[in-house]
Structures are given as structure tokens and as C-alpha cells.
Length: 88
Image 1 (cartoon, one colour):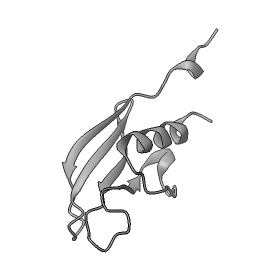
Image 2: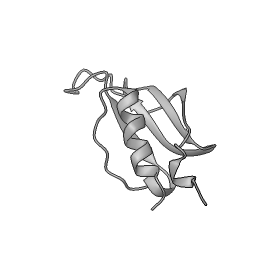
Image 3: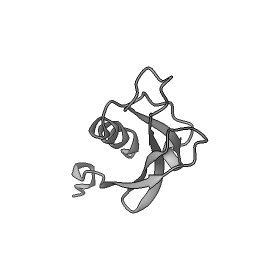
């Protein structure tokens, strides 16, 4: 009997600076079960309505081309990522 559906995806958020050509430079590499799956960037540009929130800059694999909301916290981003990384 397989219990694979009960195993939660291990997500690691590794800090990294991202060259966005703007003040939005604080980033996180999103690593899920050892694979790079996305890059998040914290919004710092004063023109943003939601300064301090996290933007889904790019996704890879199953997350490629996904539209994501802007996340108020890394915890919110992690929950969204886990939902979208679940096997079909």
C-alpha cells in the first residue's frame, strides 16, 4: 500500500540576491525535494502597492507559466507552492 499521497513536499527557501534591475533584490530560491522549482523576489520598489510582499518571479517544471498571487509572507508562498507541486 502506497502512502506517497501523505508525504508533504519538502520546500527549502534559500536566500539569494536577484538582479531585477530595480530595488527589488531580496530573493529566495525555492527548492522542492532537492529541485529548483521557482524564484521569489521581495517587493521593495516604492511604486509597488504591496511593498514587503513576495512576488513569484519565475517557475520551473510544473510551476513554469503559472500565475501566482503576490504573497504577504513566505509562509503564504510556501502553502501555495505545496498545493501547486502536488502530483496530479
